[in-house]
Image (cartoon, rainbow, N blue to C red; front, side, top):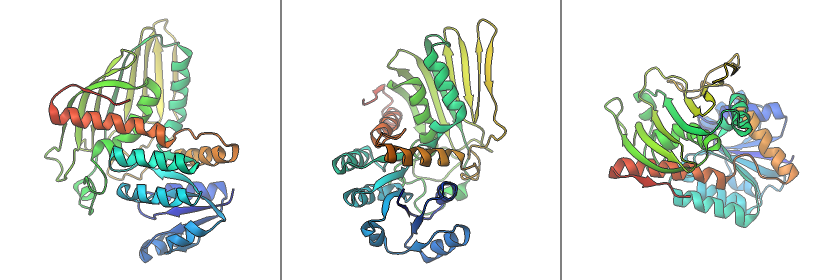
Length: 337
């Protein structure tokens, strides 16, 4: 693989950089901020630059990771896609679904690969659960419910732009819960309609929602509930729970357990179970980022689609839109396909 460009050296960069060190690829990292370039260079063996046009023009750079705030994504994707560079994009796609759709269009027009860092799909437990569901052993799925009981202190939202519509595009759903909601959709299939509530609790001072609760109906007829918050001190592991006609299965953090009416069970409990659901949003290993980067680079090399394409990532944006609209209107809302 030719060189990789890293665009943005803020809070999200560490697991990306660790993954690229593990993969042994050449990297050039960009930030307009001297202090961030210096801090990055002290931790990682990659050169840095303050000139983004240098990366755009560098023909030896075949792909970039865009790790900047969500409201910058569309313009950066258009810039690098026009230069023929493949893109791994941090979630969310952008701050509005219209801008997210423009990202999909820009990538498809340029004929480049865009993968989205929704790394929870790469959890070994999630892959085992996906295989179990595909096998039909759980029977017909009658319910899928998801709970994201995370915590962020007020200091987290005191950072300029954090939790605002202008920079982040929303609160707990699009910024934190998006990982788990995307995984849920990949396992349970699309949601048809939503009703529920979304609010900013007295726990936080912020513009956007820190709590959302919805009842949902999936297109396959299954029912469920979704609860997502960053007001649950001190934070706990997310859960996705399935009820089938032959038993139940629960994905909790990095592990899962399934129990069947015939008395048998399946379990998977990895030694490390930290999800970034507490006060430190970066308190997790980089194994899932490494898996996502490996998939992205292999997709480029073999000319296939990555596991999470930009078009695939639009599905979770449509679900978030519907949950927020239901909270605003008090009405049942159909999820856009």
